[in-house]
Length: 221
Image 1 (tube, rainbow, N blue to C red):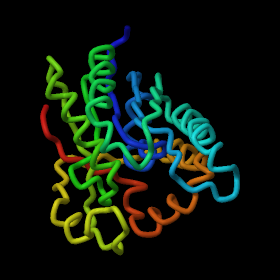
Image 2 (cartoon, helix red, strand yellow):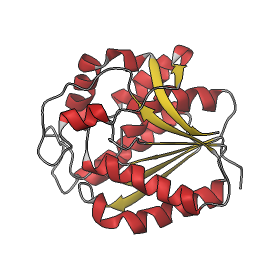
Image 3 (cartoon, rainbow, N blue to C red):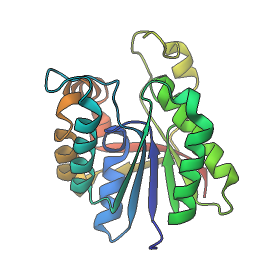
């Protein structure tokens, strides 16, 4: 199997595009092999009236596969762990991620930070899952955690970390990558997530800088 240049481990369809779509496309267009590992099919997201709640996981997986094709992803691995309840499946999920690490032996891994960017419980679980898998992995790839250069000021949400905690846990950006010539591909990928258009619009409204510059905290490498 081809060794991956970049392996991205995130919780839901659209996480990869919103947080590191530019990095993904830049890696792929320079000849790199990119693999995404998505832990849920996003069944707890919005439907915006486009499908039933029962149909949503399949719809969001289709959106994901179209989006990552736009970004040049070589392989999209999608698991069906329960959206909203990853915390109850962290051991199982870490085993799935470890299997991906061993099969793809990536040079670089991207994952969520401890605060999940916005305090989302699944994002925080995805962080612990990725690090648990990496702790059991024999090799030492470069590890990047997505982060933000903008203070977190969103209102409190049930089940999420308190906004003050989210901000207190925000990791410093030690690597900033310019989306540059990958902007068109990133926008096209974002456009495939029709069911999540409100979430995408909110991110662009609150954090417009992330469209052009993606920030990471380098853990190792």
